[in-house]
Structure formats: C-alpha cells, structure tokens
Image (cartoon, rainbow, N blue to C red):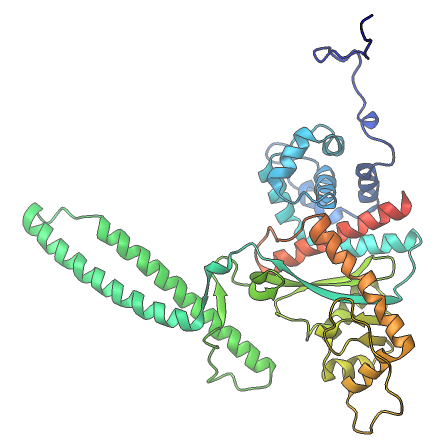
Length: 429
C-alpha cells in the first residue's frame, strides 16, 4: 500500500483571501513592536506629511516606522536588506500590510526623521516605567568602539598633509609647464583653435586633491585651537600634532584602538540598570572614557528623569578628577582603579587605616578591596557587558551606516531603543 501524505499542491490557488493576522503567532515580536509603536507619540513624524498635498501619496509614516524599528530589533540595518525582507519575510510583510517600499524610500525616511526617531529612546523608557520597571537604582557604565562608515586608509596625518601639499604644488607647477609647452607645440602644428584634453584633466585631479588637503589642514588646525581653548591655553600659536588624523570620508570619526586593532570609529557609551535596560546612551569622539563619567551621569538624569543611587564603572573612567566630581553627588560610586585580567579576583583588603596622604584613587582601591565593595563591583560585568555583546554580537551591529557625528548619535539612539524594546518584549511576553 502506498504511503499517504498530507496534501501538497504548490500550484493550488487560495480558496479564500488569507488573513495577515493568521500568519504569525499572537505573541510574535512583530505584533509587540506594532502595539508599542501605536502607544508612542509620532506627531514629529506624521506632521511633516500633513501639510503637503502635492505629488503621489506617500507610504504611511506609521508603517515605515514600524518596519524600521522591527528591522533594527532583528539585526537588519541595511535599507536594501530591509527591502528584500519586505518581499521574503512573513513578519516584515505583516507589519507593512503588503506594502513594498524600495530601499531608497526607507533610507530617506530614516535620514529625514532621525531626530524624531532619537526621541523614541526616552518615550520607550517612560513606557517601561509604566509597565512596572523600577526606577533607576544601580547602574553600570561602559563604553565600546563602533566602526564608522569610513576606512582608516582614507585618513591622513597633519604631518603627511604638509608633505603631500608640497609634493602636489610641485606636480601642479610641472603640469602647468607641460601644458603650456604642449599648447605651444599644438598651436604650431594644428593651429590656435585646437588643444589636448589629457593634461588639463590630470591637472584638475591634482588641484582637487590639493584643495581637499588644504581644507583638511584647516579643520585640524581649528580642532587644535578648540582643544587648547578648552584646556585654558592660548590658541594663537598652537599647531596640530603631526600625528593628528583627518578622515576624508567621515571627518568627524576618529582612529581608535579596539580589540581589532586601530579602527576608524566612534566611542559609544551605555548606562544599564539591573534589568539590563539602557537608561542612558551617548556617542563621543574621545578615544577613551576618561572624560565621560560625569557627562554620562548628566545624560542618565536627562534621559531617564532619575539619578542613580549606585554607579559601577571600569578603570577607563578612573581619575582623581572624576572621583572628586562623583564625590560631590549623592551617588555611591564603585570605579575600578586599574585594569583587571580576565577572571582575576581582588586580593585581601589591607589591614589598618589608610595613610593620611592617601589619594582619592587609593581610597577607591581600598573600597573595592573590602568584602562588600568587591561583591558590589563584581556585578558590573553581569549587568553592562552582556548588553554590549547582545548589540554587537547577537544583532550584529558593528558598524554605523550613517556618517557625521549627529547622524551617528541618532543611529546609536535607535539601536539602544530597539534593545530596550527587546527587553520589554521578553519581560512582558
């Protein structure tokens, strides 16, 4: 007797129109994102379209918002990949209700409404409080390098610019002389109304490079003066460091040291609470975290509308100045005074009182060596480092798609917002 199978007729038409609601289970992430977006204030996005009556009707901004947020939740950041998912992925098709905007529409929507999308971070935090998440208490702080949308090979140092500028000036002079000689020879051979095209094109290429290098030099000189002014020094005679770098693709990015070596990147900051909700986030151009402690405390207060009671941070944030500043607040800080090796345990706490000449760093080191202090600080790795891993490894966000400091800040805010949405989804569903 032949084996009996369930019916399989690929060419069979559907007898009744399918319902999109039946394509996914009720507790699917796509429905959670859709319901959550419906609770947010989207007026900053929708009002842009209400006063424009010309042209073909645009895609609904609420639909594009839901698709974009869901895409970032599941680790799809490229507009071209989002377009492909809108054709092939059931969840994307359900959210879009059959609409298929192309990648340019998606990219333009993200770029146009980036400031409004940035505001979602605080709205989602407030919604988390309404859903029962506790107010900010213990917070762990950490920074990470995320690659910019630019190659480090497109960067040039100030010293190299000076050398290249001199070289290009000489080449332009030589090409001008060759052009004049060629023009004279062609005039004698063909007449005054004929000329060649190769040398002028070569000359234009070198002149354009020379112009870009001049602009880059001026930018580095302006940056050096700003840094001198911020440090309370005279900016009149200051010169950039010969090793100071300028990237021609994304001038606002910086070369930074990371586990992958030196990369063209931005330094992102996150403050995470015990539920692994991000309660504060920012982007900086600084290559290390030394100057980010107090700015991040201010950022947490602004974005979460609350002051943390405890703050845990690694040695990258430790300095006598930072410890003095955090000591003026009500925050109970636990900041490592040195970089610890993986799996390293703090030694026994030294006996006896601290010397009278002990610095703030010495006092913090003693605090972390106590049994209670070591237990508190040990929680840092379990709070904040998994969040960095979930963003960079699980969702694959290792490089910004946008260029420029303001755009990168907006994109990082969207990444952190979708991280919190995923946490709320797991807590609620």
